[in-house]
Image (cartoon, rainbow, N blue to C red):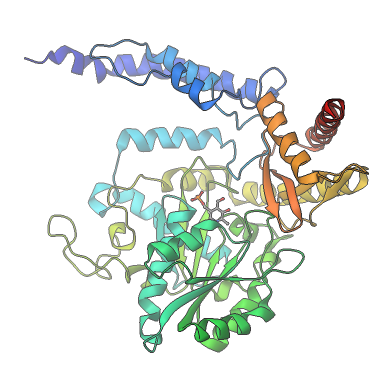
Length: 480
Ligand SMILES: Cc1ncc(COP(=O)(O)O)c(C=O)c1O
């Protein structure tokens, strides 16, 4: 007979209370230490093979570890996103209140495929979708769904596009036009849809990495010559490598004139709609058919929470109209309140809770100020790079993503040098920065997400890049 006392212990409210209090204290100390930043590496680098040794790969039949101890190790060995020197991928050190909401969502585990499994979640999700739609300029007819990440969001939007445009093909194979700087998930979604390797046709960009709208007619012609019919153009707001906003209004004109679906990947840059100063970057987005908008990037939420919003909300139902007698048995429109009609996901986390709570408890101005501050800071950093000798800026930033590199006079192998600088800095734990391979070379890339980090951290980054670069150059000279 199984020992039921172990089940009772696992569900014991008293044990949960004790662990929970201890854990909140540990997390508060962790956030404070990470935010101070000076005594801990951003990423305590360990080689992957060594990491397997540190984390046993088999599980015991009987308890072998204490939860508090295990979680303390998880905190210690993480990439510390609240550290002011974390400036890497577009994943913020999230608002702590978002994490508290996630804990509530986890305890409740209200699944949200159907209304009955998370009734209040359905109301919160609807409010967020309408709010996001309003930010990109959609009217009251917009509607959509919250899903698990921008990549799945792009696929969800493009699946609806496929359904709506299927009678425009005249026997040809479909194609999508997207800039060569767009996030890889767009191309991957087109492949997943079974449209073939060459169905996502890359539109070239100008020197600022913006889609060249004047290249669209030629791209359509080339697709036709290959037996393909273009049914959709995807604009980026903004692109991942350089944070560049495509000229959305001009793309919208083109799509309008040629009866093409217009999808905007606003996973990173949708929240610019909150900022009076930067809202103009989304001009034209209001005419998109579908938009993807992540809250786990520029709304400071813990991952994942993504809105997929359709200008005409009816399009949100057109992909997933299956029936399942145990779950869904009416038409999607009749059952607008069952999110399972609009997403691949069945059991779906109550992702909306943290966004709803943040908007209610902090107000929209908090987020408007955040976007404006971070976009402003990127412009300040770009100026610092331009004004510091030995450095090169890739382009003037639109958003809070900046690409730059160390380019001291007389050094030719800049790509190798900057790749080595990044590796060295990341493994030392001093900063966490990433990279972008741009047509003009290998650049260091930062995304400025931390509202508590500023110019002093950026000045230290430039010092660190220079010192590391000079050390590497000196070492390579001494070897030759
Ligand atoms: C423009 C853009 N679209 C989509 C994605 C993918 O989003 P996720 O990581 O939430 O799947 C990213 C991620 O960085 C992005 O920058």
